[in-house]
Amino acid sequence: MNTIKRIAKNTAISSVSEIVTKLIYFVITLYIARQLGTESLGQYSFAFAFSMIMLIVADIGLSQLLIREIARKKFLANKYVTHAFLIKLLTSSITIILTIGILNILNYPAITRSITYAMVAFIILRSFSEILFSVFRAHERMEFDSSIRILRMVLILPFFIYHLNTSLAKAVLAFPIVEIFILIISLTIGVTKFFKFRLELDIEFIKSIFQKAFPMGAAIIFSSLYFYLGSIILSKFQGDAALGIYSAAYNFSLALLFIPAMFTTAIYPLLSRYYKESDEKLHKLFKYSFKYLYIIALPIAVGALLLGNEIMTLFYGPGFLQAGLALKILSLFLLIKFINFLLGIVLYSVDKQKQRMYAQASTAIFNIILNLILIPIYGVVGAAVATIITEIFLFIAYDHFVTKNIPRLPYHQLTLKPLAAVIVMAGVVMLTKFNIFLAIITGAISYGTILLITKTFNEEDKAMLKKLR
Image 1 (cartoon, one colour):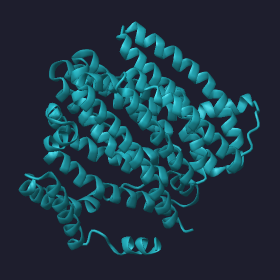
Image 2 (cartoon, one colour):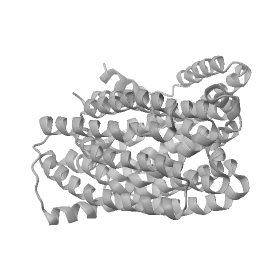
Image 3 (cartoon, helix red, strand yellow):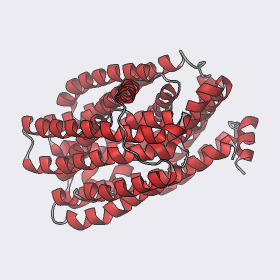
Image 4 (cartoon, one colour):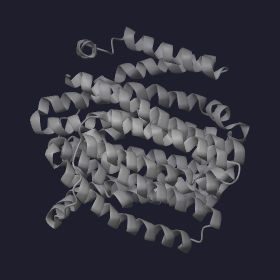
């Protein structure tokens, strides 16, 4: 199978998984919002944000490291997996201690602590599953990774909805209970298909894993801090109801990030290999990845800007109309985040995890300062504005480090034609926004039409499409 077909195959498989996973997560938040209201959604959102930060403590960058290293040296898969499991036992213990200590020191209510404990138990178990998912991805066998992720959410959803009528604390137990089953399945496939699980202990190998993984783990820690810390700060300063309003808009934005997530997951092993094999192939894959992600992200961002109120009312109900303003502000975040997904994975691929760590460390500090300044004064709007400014700051930092290792992309050439197309699309959407479905359909058609008229897709694009047949 040629490279283009392999990327397309893995992207398509990952797409299905990401769509189903994000959709079910989204359904869960919608169900909480409509059944229990803003305060309960705020409690769940706090637990989710806190657990995502703790996930990085449990993982410390191992998952990303394993994808890169096993993609290059598949014969070491067993050694990496067994030592990663041993490391996870230590980091999981630290995660549990930190969780109990932080929640009790900050004196969170009993219901919030109960929900958060369940979600942290889930992410610890999930961090073990992610080791095995890394093996699947390194072998470019996304079908295993994707099918198991879909199974996870399909099993969680009915359990969660059934018990939500009893209590939110009981409903979230669906996450850790199902994850035990997922871990067993993943381990069975890994041992059967990709490696022979033998317990071995090589202290020097563990040290080398820590040395390589630490910059990745630190980078992801800082990334998660600015990604989720705003929710925690908002909860402390403005309460659960305000967090519920903000989370409605933020969760909608996060749901759309399955697109860059699945795309970069598919190209990461190839970028890593091209870095060792061919500078020309590496730069070409980077260039076209940027082009396609930008073309997809731009109309999504403009659509969220123009239809923010209508989208929030449609999905969450009239009680969440205030979330429309937050979504409009976050529309720019969506556009930049798509590109930052790509720049971040490029830095990993060219062994510049330390530079990514530096970028995200400075970004995290910058974000914390912004949140502490803006949230107490402006509440939900302040949190949204802080998110956008932070993402711009991260783009500047990422771009600086990427262009030190790969020739700078011709951004003006890649962005002008889609920008012209989206201006036309915006006019069409404004004329038809009295009906949100009509606005989305006509906007998409007009955007695609202008892209074709302006010949945004050149002969190289056509040649790539032919290779997909």
